[in-house]
Amino acid sequence: MTIPVKAGATTPAKSPRARTRRVFPWIVFTLTFGLLLSDYMSRQVLSAVFPPLKQAWGLTNTQLGSLSSVVALTVGVLAVPLSLVGDRWGRARAIVAMAVVWSLATIGCALATGYGQLLTARFLIGVGEAAYGSVGLAVVLAVFAAHRRASLAGAFTAGSSFGSVLGVALGGVLAVQFGWRAAFVVMGVFGLVLALLYRVVISERRLAAHQADDAGPPLAAGQRRAHLSTLFATPAVVLAYLGNGLQLLIAGALFAWLPSYFNRGYALPTDKAAKLAALFLLIMGIGMIVCGLVTDRIGATRPTGPWTTAIAYAAATLILLGAAFAVAPGGLQMLLLAGGCFFAAGTTGPTSALVARLTHESIRATAFGTVAFFNNLLGLAAGPLVIGILADRYGLDTAMKFVPLVAVGAIVLLFGGRAAYPSSLAKLDAAAADDKTRRGTA
Image (tube, rainbow, N blue to C red; front, side):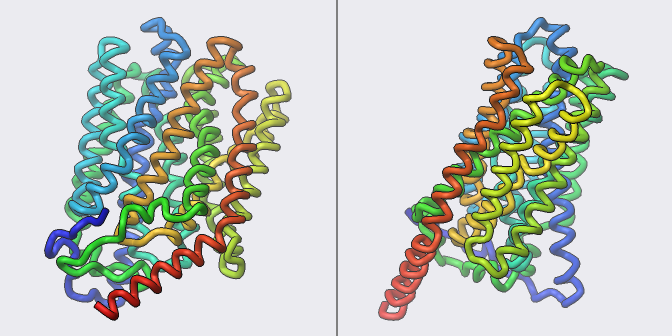
């Protein structure tokens, strides 16, 4: 299957000056990162208000988990088709439209009068956020050089943790001071303001003019995009999708349940439990950035470096979080939790760089949409719901002990990807050479 490009959709503007070329990519990163903060603030503010919602409406742990998981589930299901729309319609336009949808839906959460209405509003948040991570990351990587991919992917995706920090911490404070509905309103308004700013500053033409030289040649009018089948063309790229997706089940469980874990296990009030959980999510975000930087450094001299670092990060998560949930609440548990959170989402940068290497720029947003599909379906949607079900049956303390075991599966998949990587690259190079030969003889 191929996708025709609308004439003029990616026609570059006049070549920018050197200073503008240096500055504009960072403007793109800043605004796109800001909207990712809004994305996760709107998504994770719910975790901060679990206690008052449970008390006010008498919800079960499974219902609370479903309110969190429905967003990630919707994102997983719609990520690929909506990312494809972003690749065709225009990534900047798609970003603004998505931000408006999730922001209005977040405000709609404040108007809910029961579980069903709140679940519907959360579903609509998922619709708005479905392709944002993939389209936003494609925009960022397109205007920066390839040797920065793991660092940028890790830093950009760290916005999920930082946004969760802000959503949980600020949401907890607002819920205590003004009621849980106010928390949703503030998050929604913040997203709308950023969407307006993005619309004013960033356009398709400016993005095309600043595309990096090694991001892939811009497509001319009438030229066709890469085949969608290349999204799954090699074993290595499939195993990268699966390995990172499974690893993020751990991050999804921590995002959703750490505030309640501290509320119940440490007898902390809602606002203090939310602030403490936010600190650990902040550590997770810092870890994503550092892990991406380390991966780029190692990958500069070792082609399989991203696989090796991803495996190391998953193994560290298994050991540290496994030990954390095995000991009693206290200082030692806090220290082990901090270490586990640091590495829990560290695989994101390496695997994003690998997916970028194994797919063509013309369908890069769709490729990252595929990443989002697996991240959400295997990880961010499954984590909160599975732990909620286990918590109803065994208690939250016992349920959290199962979380780090997921890293075992991720490690196995990543080892398989590393073994398949050389042959996968050879297959891609051979296909590119064949395509060049056909074009030359046409």
